[in-house]
Amino acid sequence: MSARLLALTTSDRPALRFGAGTLTYEELARAAGALAPRLRSAGRVAVWATPTAETAVGVVAALLAGVPAVPLNPRSGERELAHILGDSEPGAVLAGAGDELPAGLAELPRIDVDVRASGPRASGPYADESPDPETPALIVYTSGTTGPPKGVLLSHRAIAASLDALAAAWAWTDEDVLVHGLPLFHVHGLVLGVLGPLRRGGEVRHLGGFSVEGVAKELGEGGGTMLFGVPTMYHRIAEALPHDPALVRALTQARLLVSGSAALPVHDHERITAATGRTVVERYGMSETLMNTSVPVGSGPRPGSVGLPLDGVELRLVEEDGSVLPVSDGETVGEIQVRGPNLFTAYLNRPDATAAAFADGGWFRTGDMAVREPDGYVRIVGRKATDLIKSGGYKIGAGEVENALLDHPGVREAAVTGEPDPDLGERIVAWIVPADPADPPAPGPLADHVAALLAPHKRPREVRYLDALPRNDMGKILKKALREPADD
Ligand code: MCA
Ligand code: AMP
Image (cartoon, rainbow, N blue to C red; front, side, top):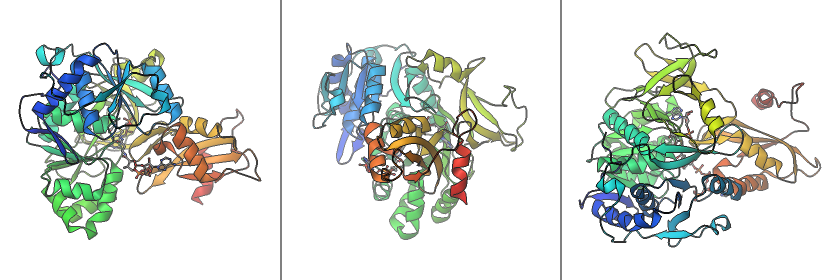
């Protein structure tokens, strides 16, 4: 593993393309090199993570400076933003010159990222000398079942190890041009989707935002070789394929189509393969572990499987009582636990949660339930916590949405569940006991309320009204009972 995370060179090959603007490796090195010295005293820097070159340059500058970057969802609501800022205590916020920042960031010194700055070539620990691989590179926030999101500390070591293991599984090289439209405040879009190509010396073309048209254009005539997306994106592609010959051609030409962040339904796998002859490769990861498994490139179609452990990753399935499953029979279900250089360092400020996340021997408990086929391939069958919802590839804790709903004056009681959704995988459903049954709050304002406090992707897509929530003798809400009436 190279000590340096990024392949910053003097080459005039393209590194980043966002829309019409391209930065070569030389330009990236100069822009980030100009910015990095201004960050060294910041302690940590927040990055207003719009899907732009400014975000990529800001993160690269922070890496060069050896300062952890905290990517912020630019659609963060006020409560979520206040929590992340209070928890991570950044010394400055990086943003594009034209970005309008919310009031919650007003107290923080602002540094505008100039992607055309031409400072000295990158200098500092990551250009001149071997960094300490344990240096934190990123702090990425991820939801739990209850409470506010936790900050996941990711080191240079973990990111480099995971990206190199993916490169081995996917034959990913500097010749690859990666196309995607993922948000840049999570591991998928930022670590795999931006740092991945930059580590290989290849190129990323970001669509600005996901669209089927953008994929067809950049993978087709644009010459993209790889596509990364969440299942919702592949579902939308599968829907469009029958009416879009240019999209069929684009996918057929691509070297590698990768899906992750949630399970890609077999039906969507099959529709894409039937239309293009291509198989979508699934990989399985988490903010805390980066990538754990992947279907190796060239292994043939394995819809429904997340493949084999990546290089360096140890994986085991564990029963409820902690005993390790000795069988690979494609039937016996256990929790996936992993160990390896790809793992995070800790949850920021949460030694309790960090300790609870590991079993003896340094095994991380993923909470994902799976079976192992006789040939070692892993198939995820569910999740331990029903209070974690995956919607559009975003992990959302039922508890944080419930707390936000309870802050609405029209809500007396609230419970949140996830229900199957053909597009989003799961959609958030809010079950509400109104404060005034004669005048219940309408679904739209409730969704807006959650979007404004937390983030738009955490808003309920459906609201159901009840006279009382079903509870057991202890007063605990019986979420299973909430699902049943809707199924009738
Ligand atoms: C809608 N909008 C609103 C409201 N309603 N804004 C404020 N208040 C409201 N009430 C806005 C949204 O912000 C958005 O704006 C637009 O309307 C559409 O919103 P929505 O319907 O939520 O979007 P969508 O079309 O359903 O999005 C689907 C998506 C998205 C594009 C697939 O879910 C997505 O980008 N998912 C990726 C998630 C991801 O990267 N996960 C990785 C984490 P606008 O259109 O302007 O944005 S998992 C991970 O990292 C691990 C390691 C892994 O394994 O990968
Ligand atoms: P996050 O905490 O947002 O990083 O999401 C991590 C979770 O996404 C994992 O624990 C899994 O539940 C889920 N996940 C990621 N990739 C896959 C996949 N290919 N198939 C099924 N679930 C996945």
